[in-house]
Image 1 (cartoon, one colour):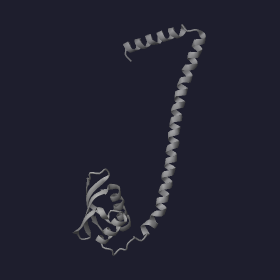
Image 2 (cartoon, one colour; image 1 turned 90 degrees about the horizontal axis):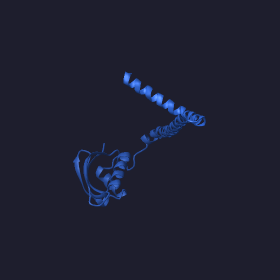
Image 3 (cartoon, one colour; image 1 turned 45 degrees about the vertical axis):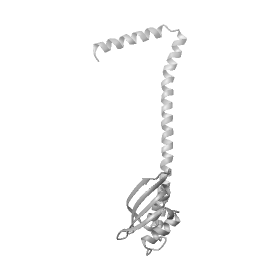
Length: 169
């Protein structure tokens, strides 16, 4: 600490002590009690806030562990479940059947071969959420994967035009 800072600190300390000594005895007692209670209250509020945050996080960890245990317990059953619709169904027939089930048949404007075990599907003015749900269902139940996708916004809100290349293993 340099000499200027030490002098400033000593001056501040002397002025504070003079101010404190100028108070009535009762005021000095109140100031002393406040000097002890205020920091203790601030510390207590900080600790209570941290304690609440820890409790919330502990509950979240318990929920996440329960979810993980459940997922791990049903994963073998899901992996071993037979796929719907038969494994010998052609990709075109599968797309036709599942798009009707998903209420997308009217929006599909073309299905063309795109290679071995692949087709290119054009969808016009269809709800985005419905397309995503249909694709997830195809992947989960039949193992059909999206190898490429081009999705553009249609004029109506929530609707899109899409060109998808789907592949079946």
